[in-house]
Image (cartoon, rainbow, N blue to C red; front, side, top):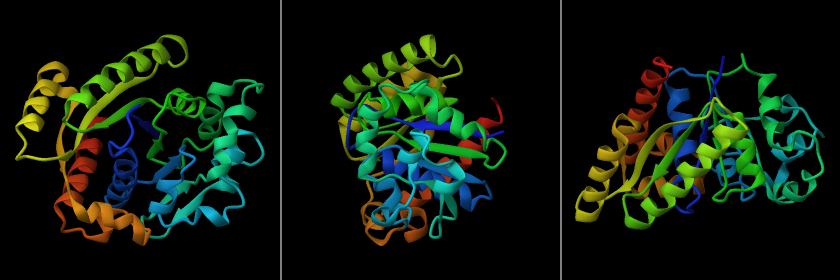
Length: 256
């Protein structure tokens, strides 16, 4: 059985794609079978996995519209050692084209169900908006991983996201829950970061992951080489943080 996690935050620029790609690679490095699903039309997770979005014959777009099977569309990430269900600009049109389709919110869920025994972890990189694509990700997932920066505006966006998750849980996916909050791009020298971090721990308790990802230039450089940061420079502080996060995730799922 696969553990399916959506990596989501309605605020942009908070490290969703960086988290998804590096968690996938870190889990794969620890012997897990991983599928990364790119649900963002920008296709950044696809390119960051070393898959060229410009040459795709089939993508997650074709899977959602029933034009291709997941098996036909998935690609191996040679650099990350995991599988990807890639995305490109075609996916932007899926929003309109899915409006009249049956079970439009659960099309990804049904596609993944056919491969439940193929993977230990499925990670879904959601776009930074509450769209039909994000809704497909949340309906397919067992839980949500929320990457967030420790700053004031991130707290504002977090309350909106928690309300969205509650609504999806109540109306579409009763299995959905918050797995945990991951503090990313963390600056230990910032008083505000430390204050917000303390607030998160006080309010969410053990839902806050112990792992903290620092602000790290090597993680930012890795996508330009088509590689996850944990493999681009394994010794970097950011890479070490994601490897520790993967180990924490493996331990946490044992309690499910």
